[in-house]
Length: 409
Ligand code: ADP
Image (tube, rainbow, N blue to C red; front, side):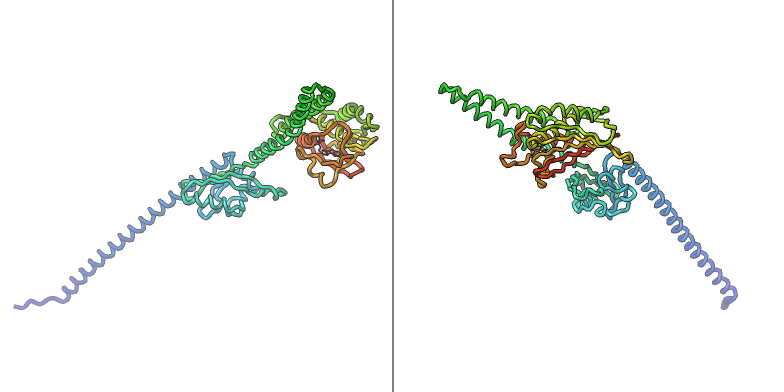
């Protein structure tokens, strides 16, 4: 007996099987799609958490930069500045907002600094000293000596710490020059004293004491010169280092001018000259300042005026009233002489320490002996410390005028 398959049943069975398989496949595919969607969501959430954490870390690092007194930059791997401490402005002459996002090379104009930053980005700590052009307006011909330490920031960027050594280098240089000048300036009087002492000793061995008195007097002059130099060097060193605060009390410049004129008048009149005090305007002549320092400055200028005067030359101390409308009112004090004058080429240098102008013999000052070349350096430093200024103008054979301006406030 042959069995016959009912085609309808067979079709129904096949249809049911196909539907079942399709449903199973569809479910599997849906499950797979659900899986990858939830994985993507989880990864997205993790990435969000990571980026929020990175943001918080960056904010903490930026807050650290805000709090530091040092000049510190944070740079990104592409060598742009991510953040800068407020003190960076001192060295880079740009506001923090202006530094942010700027390429390092553009903000610092220094390839060596960029190299150090690159080393730090590659994972090592790099150190060096660089000379940066002073980027402040009006200072472009000055250089700043900056010590750099660059280190990885633990993220993907780098820290750059900048320490301005300009002042330290300047003081180091002053000290070296000072010692050089000092040994040079001491040698001349000391060898003169030695020669004079030797000649007294040799003569006295022969029983000859005739010139001993004059030579002893010459020794005394040289010793006084050395003492003066020692005092002035101490003054200059103190003023230059800025370590000692100047006193600030009302100083009557008219009284000071009259006192100085009286002090040097006997020397001036001995050579037929005179010292005058002139007032242009009615004052006020009282400025805040250190009376002893200002007296020292005025004495130096008036003494020079008398020293470098021609016979019968007059020295005038002139006080000029500040213009009432001046936003920074000041008193002007001029010390003008009718002396030998100073050649133009020396004018910019006479305020340097130990700078003296070589004179042809018959122009050598006959009053007061040789100077130390320190007086004007001291005067300049003292006036600058008062917030004032000092200038010189001179015509050879006609005379010299020093002009000091001191702020009234
Ligand atoms: P010094 O103690 O040698 O006078 P200063 O520093 O006071 O040192 O002055 C420096 C130099 O400037 C002097 O050596 C002198 O050549 C010159 N000088 C200063 N004042 C005058 C002046 N009034 N007239 C001419 N030359 C001057």
